[in-house]
Length: 153
Picture 1: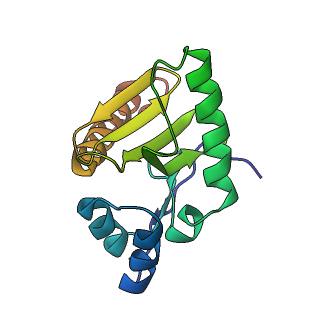
Picture 2 (picture 1 turned 180 degrees about the vertical axis):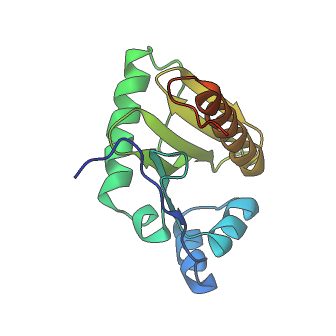
């Protein structure tokens, strides 16, 4: 059954050997490696976008599907965003909408969030998580204030 919103909370952290296994394939930014030891994936991180577990990052189908979507998106923009597999690691994506999270593995840890609205860049993983959390808290407050949808009390 498809639901509009997905939720689950963070998975338990990955074992250091699993993080090291991923690190053998990709030069992981230290902040992202640390994040994985705290949280090895998060279903419905923002209500629809899943942050991928290491098993998915090591070649799962959702990662490949995200790249197909990203490459079509970038091609449609005239390759304006230069989203290449050599530069970025897909670390999260939504099942049924354009929402893909990438981390730059060639430069300082920079996170890009690709949505219908464009590509938003964040200087760090922490900045991305804070921005996503703030956005959803603002959305929740607006829904609660709506007289048709809000909670009275």
